[in-house]
Amino acid sequence: MSCDLEPTMAPFLTGNGGSGGEIRIPQLILEIHIGDGRRPGKCGLIIRGALDMSAGLGLSFVSGSLTLSVSAVSKLTTAFLTNNITANEAQLTTVLRLLLPTVLPSLGDGLGAVAPPELFGLQVDGVAVSRNREFYTLFANLVPGP
Image (tube, rainbow, N blue to C red):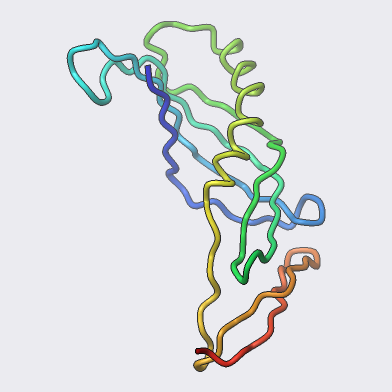
């Protein structure tokens, strides 16, 4: 059995949430396949659904790179597109509401760090990230490159 998550739209930042803000993840496609043991890969689609959710977002500088962290999931909406095993969709939604808040932060932590680009031959050395309503401000020092 395999469970695949495939984004169909880019996530975006909203003005909602706590000090770090909120990231909105629209139209995340969830597919659950069951293999027959003979053919590798995706075969035997049993469930296909679309997920919309919001999650808390943390931005910080670590070793000069901007790191992202995803926290608690909120506003989870599910829509089942294919249900080939006639599973109880209300119960599946309950299971997803229990599993996704623990899985998505670990996926968000896997995004890695983003190194700021050079600016006119100067390296950007990140200091802090702050948020003022819908705007994010990156504070940095410009230092001569090697």
